[in-house]
Amino acid sequence: MALRVFFDGSGKSDDHPTITVGGFLGDDDLCKEIEHEWNAATKNRVFHFSDFGKPRCNLGSHTWSAIERTAFLKKLASIINREGSYIFTASLEIAAFNEILYKAAYPQELGPSFSACAYGAILNTEALLLKEGRQHREVHYAFEKGDREHEIKKIFADWNSKNSEYKGLRSHTFLPKNTTLLQPADLVAGIVQRCVVSAFNAFPSLDNGLARTRLQTFDRHYSGDGVTATIVSGHDHDKCWIVNPKSFDFLDQIGSRFFERHPDQLKKRMKQSPYKPKSAEKPTV
Image (cartoon, rainbow, N blue to C red; front, side, top):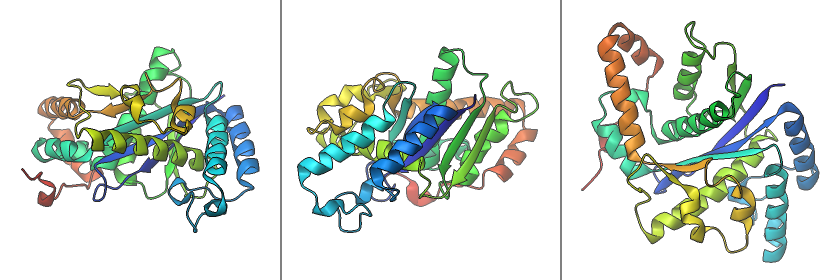
């Protein structure tokens, strides 16, 4: 039975200090159950976390009381965070990442902040599968259509190369925003992004000096209504992370060593990765 992963993003590099990619993993049968229960809870209306509680919300939640909105979000959270489901998130500080990106030898290998964040979420997922001995299971990843497809496709092209042990085992697709199983991913990403922004605003550095910081480190910034805890409980110590600059600096060093040994691959990779950071992204001091 194949495993399925749904990821969505929250935050914009021009408007927010952090960005988050989050979602969940489950097998085919579990995903069918989540889809059925989610549609029942939302009455087949499209849920967007950023619209929730506002007049444009398709659910009419702007007319609900605060207690009703909290209860509904907890109900949705319990549909996702259940036995057999794995919640994954990756967040990064945009300014700190851009500083690494600007001085990187091969910035196209990292891509802009959303792509880098997506790589972090994917690698978190693969690390767990490796730990559990499930790395040779068939895994299908789904993202929202339009989410930096060019860069994200690159990692799957690498996995499907003739020398990869994952050849034929990893696939991906980009789906419309209203796809039912992208909506739980939207909720996960939105809730965690809200927590990370709160933590950043309290102390504008989430870096612990290591490659990653556990989301659980900032549990005092979980929402007081219990929604954040309902979403990430059981996952926030080993599957939900802030990815620090040290990780991206390390990845750039790996890329540099690879291209030194295989200079013929550089031109090919440049064609595969059209992204080039703008000089405007140079951090101000």
